[in-house]
Image (cartoon, rainbow, N blue to C red; front, side, top):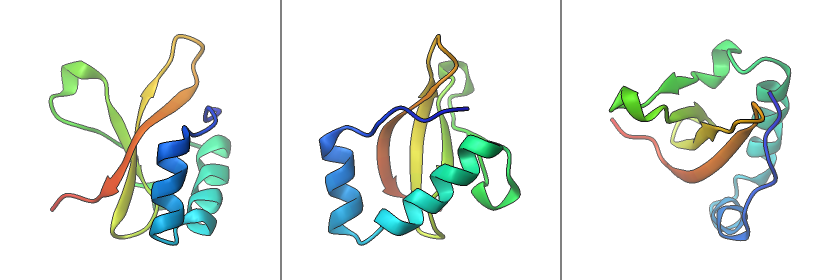
Length: 82
């Protein structure tokens, strides 16, 4: 599944927290196999909204939706909840 280009505000979050390289690595894994084990891809509650996330690192996750064109659109990058 392809990831749509990031919005500027999301790229700024990656830059601010030094996550650019980690994100590129995880993005490549995601595009090859979105269920790759180290991504920890999951559906977020409430499940009926069809919002998902994958791990950038142990602390940060990328939150995404799947578009009608079967692309992942990242809508948020935030610290992982506990």
